[in-house]
Length: 534
Figure 1 (tube, helix red, strand yellow):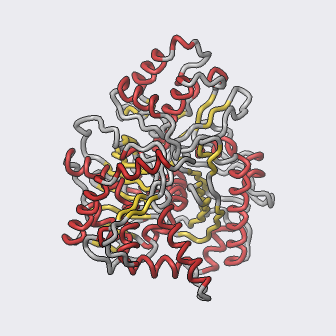
Figure 2: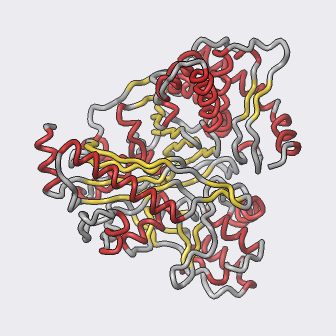
Figure 3: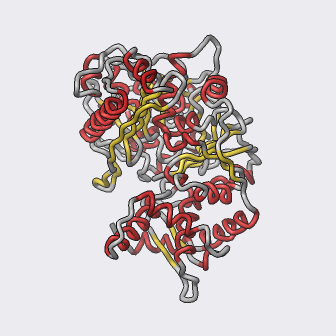
């Protein structure tokens, strides 16, 4: 589309905005009515480990959002010479799960406990047994029940419990709501009603009845909304919070706030049965849309939904590229010390491509990428670890491919349950996230790990911010009885298949052999956790 045409769209208030709070970056993407990205802004941020709890300060939420939006405005001004006064629709998303409780006056009761925490083991185990439904440690209800088990004094004061996406949406619109995909990471969803499961809510209330809390669970949870529903409008106060320049006018409609899992599904058109996607960045998770229910409850598998309510099996791992990124940064420091200045893309590209020259057995090298705990393999804490024998073939290619394999090993262990034990059928996986930025490398490694063809679209780099912008567009454009699946397939992704890499037998064998070495070496990681204290 010509620059002048885009300028007219923006001036007419017909552009749509999506913003996602990722674990290391806040990103805003502006799209046109056809779903094409036309401008963007971002802001880097990091979680902190405070009193052994992974958290973000809420001041950083707003400072980061305002900086991100200001950079979007600057991009729009630079490209099109205009500002933004109106928008057709807005959507917000964020990393799923976690725990943010508030009292009746809207005061936050404890610091935000993020998805990365593995401190709710007793609650997770007890709720899974009681509800006969896997309740992962990350889920909001596990955090709530653990706080109850810990007899934390704030619990009786709770009047609202939400996630990061729900919190930001509430502050900007005044609405205490969540999209169904995000809600499914708080508490189980009943697929018949597309609401929180009423029977399980009653069971939870019965479980804690002797505590005498002045609330029932249903009273403190957000309202659940489906993709395409209106979730409120930008308030005057919200407009000031978002846009400190004062250009943006209130009254803009919002779509339901979603989690990064749901926006990843949308961004890869993986919302129909037998489709799946993998998001690989700081954490990694695979989302497989199911044809039928699983045979049994698996503690390694989360059951969530698409933004339109279809059942999804989710394999979520806390650790993916953090350790890999740290090694690349180290090599960058070495290059700089030698007088060679390499930018990040060049560094990653060079080292990732080198990994494709590795021996089939990776020279016998072994790595664990555990910056934090990993529930798939039973760790509440993690220690990044690299090990080798004296006679290992310690080459750069073997070293880099070992860390690429390590980044996906926990995911591989979880996916084996779905593909082998449950015989779930997947036609193709679509990949997105930082692991796939170097063309062909992360994609090939993922295909080997999944033993399923992996596609990456040109838009994969846009990620969840683009996905939530598309959900905002779906709300704005939805025709009567037009499903999300139809909207995406016919209006956004028509004819766009992406680059597909099928798994090579030798790579699958290589990854399977590595997983055997990785599983056998888990006691090494356990010893590191026990012996190296934080």
